[in-house]
Length: 212
Image 1 (spheres, one colour):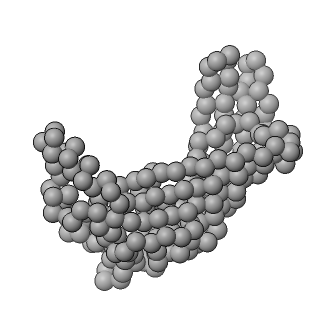
Image 2: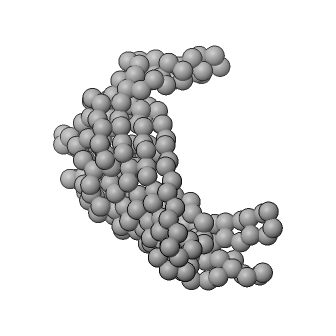
């Protein structure tokens, strides 16, 4: 989920269940552009998100041993008014499904606010740019793939609070996560499944807003 609030917390990206060969370095660059419009201003807590986010993440993986791979994820976050509002507006109008809240809002603006019980938790109303929360990952392949048995790997991660919470670039807290990746290859075909659990730090002051 690439909405600004969800990205405050660590989430595993899908990963192969095979450790990198010892000594091998793998570098990947992920670029995402998201347009968010959410309006719960009539409720308590008050929440509104109208912005675009450009997120560029450098992912570096290194084969430490035959069975262990270490990873470093470094995100750069740019929250801005963007350029997609006009395109989305035109598409919605073309199918007769223009959202009322989109029609009411100013195009290409930044307005992200969260207020709970009179306490302002988030207030971003201008462009922000900076580093996000950097995370360290480890993958340990516990089962090697055979003809009948899939490869199985355990995953661990720690996210550090390097991003600025006031600019919505990070949570301001450490997260810890654990997961598993399972994969089986048959010739040109491959099947994989994985999952994970994150124990997030709470970036909000009020207990009602602790992440689920």
